[in-house]
Each structure stands twice: as C-alpha cells, then as structure tokens.
Image (cartoon, each protein chain N blue to C red):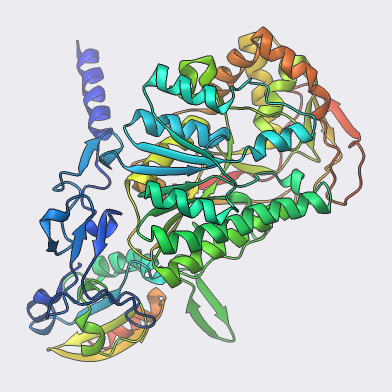
Amino acid sequence: MDISTSEFSKEVLESKTPVLVEFWASWCLPCQTANSLLEEIKKEYKKKIKVIKINLDKNPTFSSKYNVKGLPTFMIFKKGKEKERKIGAQSKDNLCQMIEKFI
Amino acid sequence: MAKQIKKTRKKVKKMKRTTFVCHNKNKTCWNCPAAIFKGNVDFRACGQEKKVESLREDGQIVIECSRRPKLGHYEPNITFEQCPEWEKTKYGYLLKNMRVMILGIDGYLGWTLALKLGKLGFQVSGIDNYTRRDSVMERCAHTIVPIARMTKRLKTARKVLGIDINFRKMDICDIENLKIFLEEEKPEAIVHYAEIPSAPYSMIDVDHAIQVQKNNVIGTLGLLWTMKDIVPNASLIKLGTLGEYGAPLTGRPLFEGMFPADAILKWDNREWSLGGELTPRDPVSLYHVSKVQDTFNVYEACKYWWLRSYDVMQGVIYGVHTQEVSANPKLRTRLDIDEWFGTVVNRFVAQVILGLPLTIYGSGSQIRGMIALEDAMECMVRLIASPPEPGQYAVVNQISGLHKISELAETIAEVGRKKFGLKAKIQRLENPRVETEEHPFEVVSRNLPQLGFKPKVSLEKEITRMFKLLTKREIKERIKAKAQLVWPKTRWSGEKRKSEVLEIYKPGTKKVKGYKGKLDI
C-alpha cells in the first residue's frame, strides 16, 4: 500500500480505477489507528478502488504540491484528478460514503 | 502406527506454528537510533518543522550513520536485515553492542533488566540514588530476598556473568550530573525505571505524596529536556502502569493508550471517529496521578522535539526468576512484602509460607492485569530492539493475564498446599483504598504480540518458583521478622489504623461470582 514519490504518477494519476490516498506520518496517532480500517476497505472494495498510503515525512514534496495541512488526509483521485478530501481521523462509514460517490 | 503418524503430524503442525518470525527485519534507518538526519527534515509537515540544513537540491532526506560515518550521506532506507550493525537473535534483530542506560538500575526491575541486557551483549550503564532502599528502610521494612550492596553486585556480575556495567550514583532530578553522564555514555536507548512505584506510599501523608510526585514528575520532565539537548535520537522506554486507566464501569475496553479508528463518538445526531485520541485516564492514587502526568509529558515531548518513545502500561509484576538473577545469590533482585512496596502476589506467597491468613482488600472482586518478571523482561528486550521512528509515541499494554484478587488468593493457597504442604486461610479486610471493587475489566494488548512477544511463564509456574526460593530458612526468617508490616494501615482517607477483619474462610469454600476479566490479544 505504501508508495514513494517516484511511483505516484503510475500508481495514482494513471490508475484506471479511483484511488483512495492516505497521507500519513509515523508520529501521527490517528494515522497509526487508521491502518486497520484501510485494510478492511481494501478487502471490501477489492477491484473497485485502489488504496494507497503516502508517508509525508519520507515524501515531503506532497505537502506543498497538494496543500496537505493536517494528518491524516484522505483524498480520492479519479482519472488523475483530486475529487474530494477529508482531514483527521475518519470513521469507516465516513470513508465509505466518500468512496461510494466515485465508484 | 496410524496413531504415531498422527502424533508426528501434530508435532510438525505445532513446529510450523511456532516458526520464528522476525518482527523487526523490515524496520529501517528511520527506526535506528544510530541514524542522524542530515537532509531537509520536514517532520510535522503540517505544523512545526524541524529543519536541518538541506544537503541535496531535490530536498530528499539523507542521513549519516553515527556508527559508520565513512559511508557519507545516503537515503535512510537500509533495513535491519540488510544492515551489518544489526544482528539476528532470538529477540529479532539487535543493534550490536547497543548502548542502553537504565535509570533506577538498583531496583527490582532495573537490576534484573541490567543483567539480562548485559548477558545479551548490550553495553549497559545506569544510575540510582538508592531511593527504594531508603524508602523501604524508612518504613522499617526490608527486602525479604537479601540483596548485596551495589559495589558487590557489580563485582559479582563481572565475575559470574562477565558483564561490565557502568554505574553512577545519581538522583534523576540532578540534571547537571545527568547531562554529564548522558554526554559521556551517549545511550541509544534509555529505560526509565527511576520512579517511586507505590500507591500506598504516596498516600501516607503530605510529605510522602510530595516526595512521590516530585521525584516522578520532575524527574521525568528533566529527563525529557536533557534528552532533547543531548540524545534526541535515543529511544525512550518509559514505564507507566495499567492503573493509569482506572477501571471504567461501562466495561469499555482499556485500549493501548489511544482509541482505535472505529471507536465512534455520537452526539447531537452526528458522529466522529476517536481514532488516535488519547483515552481518558482515571488514576486511583496520588502515585498514579504522577504516572499520568509522566505519560502526558512524554507524549508532548515526542510532539515538540521528535523524541521517540514506547510508553509501557505495565501490569502488576510478580516473581523472582530470570536466568541471570538466579545465577548467583549475590545477583538476586529485591522482593518486598510490606504494605507499601509489596505487590499482591508477593504478599500472598509470604503469608502462605508463615501460615498466616491471606489478606484480601474489600470484596476481593477487583481484577488486575499481571505479568511474571521473566516475561516482563522479555517484553523490554523486544521494545529496545524495535525503536519507534522520530517523533513517534506508541503505547503498549504489558500483561500476560487478568486475575481476580480472590481467585489469585485461592490459586496461591492451593499451590502452597499441594506442592509445599503449607496451609493458610483467606481473610477479607476493610479496604484501605478508595477503589471500585466490583467492575468489568477488558484489556487490549496487541502491540507486544506484534513484536513477537508470547508469554511463557504461567502464574502457577512462577508462584512455584517463588515458594521454592522463599521457603529457604534464611528468607523465611526475614519474612517472619517483618510479617506485621503486610497488614495495611495506610488508608486513602488519611486515617491511620489497622483495617479490620470482615470475614475469614477456607480456600475452596467460596463460589466465584461477578465479572470476569477479558484480554484481547
């Protein structure tokens, strides 16, 4: 699930299915707890959506490029464009509602 | 024949299940305390930044290895498995000759851990100002397992186990000297046991309450500032207690420090995820308050200064055995049975040995998380082996089982009777504490198993070891000398009087009723 800057174009922008991206960092406690939810979502939506995580400390260019102001930030990308974002810990329902709009 | 094949198959299956999985082979320089960040470090991307002069034009983070500076600057993505400084052991990968400083190295746990780490090849240093020895002496009590003077302990460790420990007598609140020692040793991990660990001791009177809170809170606070200045990369293993959480009557599980993402808060027809928010604390004594304060101070220090820490919410530790402390009588660690420093299992075992009734506080329905000394030490090694990343604050609940106090008394009385022919009754006393006696109790402990920890020592096994050691003539005499100090006289109300007896009964004659503990692993 975790990718680095160089893989972003291929894995996210050029993806044929919509992508749920979580920007996270190891010091961020809500990010620590989001992992199990992302695993569940990945299983439930299998081919309908791709789940990707990007560590912002290790890939710092994204914070200015996508104006990420708080962690975790969840974004939906479809056809290379950002469609929606949610900031802070999210319930599974919240994430699923966001996903359902774009699949 | 068929039976035999079945048996072999079972054996193979069992072996497969226990196949060693290395928990930390994929950790990288990000986790390694030897890595010094040199690049454009932009942690807290969304708030405060920690800028180090950028060395590369593309802004990529690079590090320098403090152990191999000749390698120059490189990207921090070498795994423990690939790095020659990390060696594979049964505890996972361990940093070669890792420098670990133990604060409170003369105590029950500090000394035990020092020997274990030393034996594993760590470079161990430590401080202690003998507060524990002094406090126990001040209460006219003594450790029932005799312990040697520090100089003798160090000498014996060298002679018997071949371990060199760099010890310095020092108060943790003496920041100037702590700085000097940290500067000299440059530890890569710090284990913080330098706290006064007793609830009843903090409730004796105002002087004791102040002593406990000052030592614990001010000591930890000073340590954090000192670490920030001198060893910001060291991994801090700070000890908390399961008692910080209290025992919520709703029965809500005690999570590991923070709520999981699927914990939802509902209010006013709206809902939010509580994921990552610290769970409420509900301390049960002024000592526990000091531990909660420490927890918050460490949490903040990780946030402001990118320190990294495991906060260990420890269950009640009991027992006398590890391979190292049992190697020589002069290497033994202390064991207290007085009302202030004796934890429940220690007190019960001592009472059975003298044939005195086991003293339960109140109904005895209180449920507590516990772990044997040997297992607790195993956890510590795994935590040291797997440092968090810079700025990361992680909490682990360290227990191997939950026990209701009345059942604990039954088990200890039974082991004493069956294996050692000792007879003792059980008695309920007025509860000297202010605490909930009937309560549900569910504890989550999933982080340590992820580091490959599996408890090995059952309650019965460790109790048996305790009986074996404590029934020795010399030790039995020492229990006898201080037997009257087991009975509680320190009341949470501030009143000083002996708790009265509510009921005396024979083990095995009472049905266990009420809540049962639940452990989520």
